[in-house]
Length: 89
Image (cartoon, rainbow, N blue to C red; front, side, top):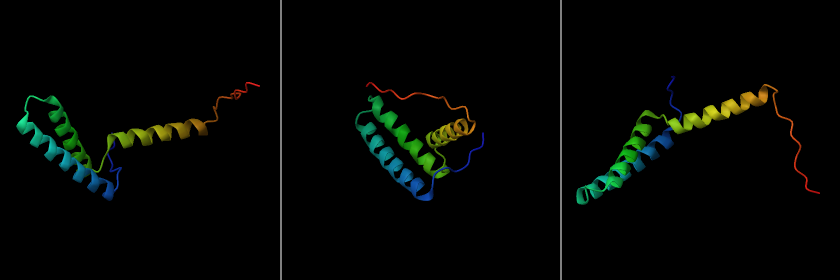
């Protein structure tokens, strides 16, 4: 698996900022209500966004780009399905 940065500098700075904001909000809420599991989930999501910003790698973006490459490759192979458009008249 080749992990290369796939998001830009501005995108990574936005992810770090929003991730730290979510992390601070969720941990402050966890102090008041530690039995709520949703705050723990939000803290993990915020930490994940901070990590994505620091590393500059987003797995969702990588999957999207790989899917786009696969679709382009299928179109280039010439194995396009011939279909007739639906015409009700």
